[in-house]
Image (tube, rainbow, N blue to C red; front, side, top):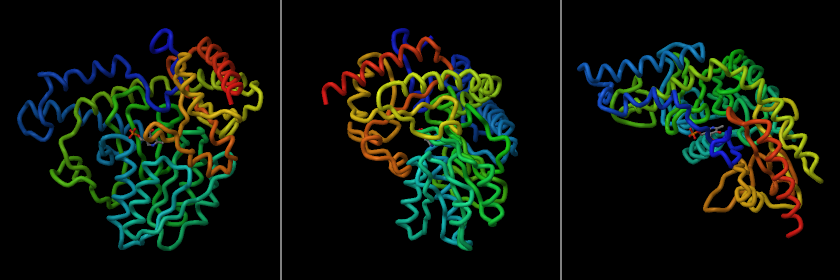
Length: 383
Ligand code: PLP
């Protein structure tokens, strides 16, 4: 069943609808029953504190880490900023160099630009034409001054899954800390074999609320707080916690863990069905890796069309999709990810991302493919 019965929502990488059980878990902390400040010592405060403790335990168990290693944030963006800016600022004595990739989310790239403005030195490793970064190229970029390496688990635009277990190993061999942005993967493939020192997560990509996320920081890694104020979150993030959001995040994680593998197994053939249907359209090309890709990601270019016009026509025809790249002041910027992959202009300008989720059906996939075919044809006849 789609979110609104007549529309086909294929933008789950942008955000997901909250599950009803998540809302139920949040309501007590939005109402009279659990409104207390978790830092207060009285019973009202302790009720909220209990919810925070429970949520922290859920997140820690989900990642297989310690309770004290989880910091709640306002989302994936803040988790990335805290990991990168916080760790680099706190460890200036160790060096001023950081390594990342050209295909990271803006939350990472802009944190790096901020550090550059402060005098830090950042190396941006290039991907191959599939958006894949090799462990060797990352390891080669590490120097004696490198404090941190940040490589996303999977790309939000083209869905390419990085070999981060190998990257983490190579980074550790070089004596450096490893951060990964797992915002797009947590709800689909997990991190079981990955030895990361810092991990960014976001609730609204896993059917939880917007405006809440978490950062795992391995015990013993110094990290400066970006927010200055109270001693919340073991002095890693000042400010009264978003108790309801955090309670909802934890519930979303519990529900997600119960069927993550089943969801990935169900979505993979749907993804491939959509890819095959779209590639049957004249001139269409797949962006991202053919097999090392998220089970819900389809990114296809339709050369001879413009993504912006296609998306508007798709929207009118009842399909919610995305270009996957930043939309600023109403116009779509060329994707830095597709550019880094070395794709030509015609392909970069006409790339559309379709991302599937819990409510996606085979009927929706087939209807969406037929609509895309019609829309691409009509756009081509205009231009
Ligand atoms: N990192 C990645 C890979 C993302 O896809 C996103 C959201 O699109 C973020 C970070 C930012 O997360 P949030 O929206 O929770 O700030």
